[in-house]
Image 1 (cartoon, rainbow, N blue to C red):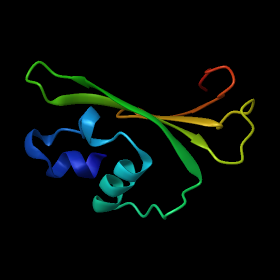
Image 2: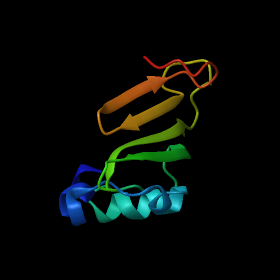
Image 3: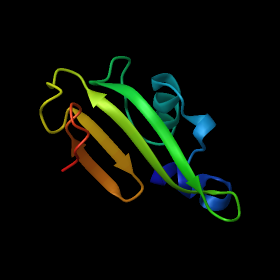
Image 4: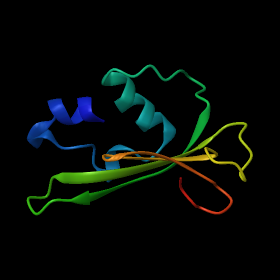
Length: 96
């Protein structure tokens, strides 16, 4: 996401409409230096943004579930923001 912002107009993160599925996330991430394969070890959950006063994306939250991790364990849900990454428990929504 930082690579995307570095090269985008206004140095903004992708907008909500830019990432709405695993396919759109993969396309944007891979175009900016990632290497997601056709079957990553996670499923797409959601992507949301908050806007700055000038209309550019100020921050983002990306949520995905990991494949094969029980929903009662930390790391079964991952939350990625412009501030960092949190391991969460899918069953409770509690992040560590």
